[in-house]
Length: 308
Image (cartoon, rainbow, N blue to C red; front, side, top):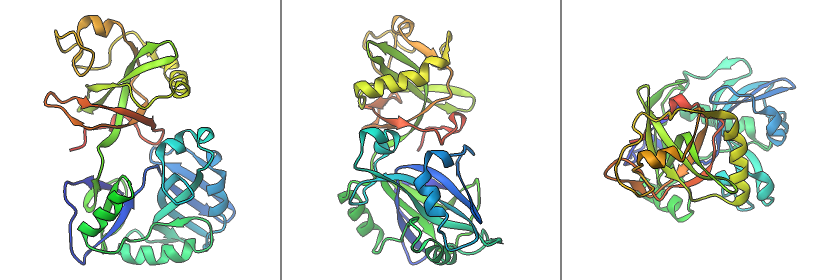
């Protein structure tokens, strides 16, 4: 079940608020002594996160399906998507699973039960296991937003207390407010540099067309440039995958690209997805001051759209 992006949180006693966590969305599936972690695109993540698997074995249920987020957290509990991506470079972070919903318990399908009842059972199931519980935040919408902003977290999710669990649907029962500008984008090419990748060219799908959103230069370390190059070098193609490039006679390198600038780029098959933070969309629909946060292995490129 997914949330719709909004510009204002709903208010009232019918809603609960939770922190929008910055990690990999995943399901935990436990059946006796067998545990599996599945990403949103059904990739098996179990071997990559042994600590989560170990915690799931201690759940207070013989079998269960939990929905939540794999995150890297520091000693204060603050999540970092970059630390999740590059664990060796962030030794002070621990991998954890924040559970926010319970889909099945001991063979019982809970998808039609109200959210507030699923959350109550979830708290019992994860108690003492090492799986973390995503608690409802107290206060009004304004108070919650203020607290989350002061902590420097990504955003807030609002959920109707009576909402059933509707898999693979984006409904008004779950909505999210982003407090900084970031989303996933499809990588369609890159500008080669002496250390691997100088800049990524990213976009989003509009129907069947991949639209150019801009270039991403910031956010890279020399190590990251080499790491990303290892991913993209196997995906080289000769044709530009963006439907709207070249798009300008201007000579600057940025949202607009001339035919000469396009000729400098190396194109790739548009299957990789990057998480990108940016200041704003410009008037000509390109990203301003974009920074790379990491690659997303849990998102399918064809599902990436420009978020309103």
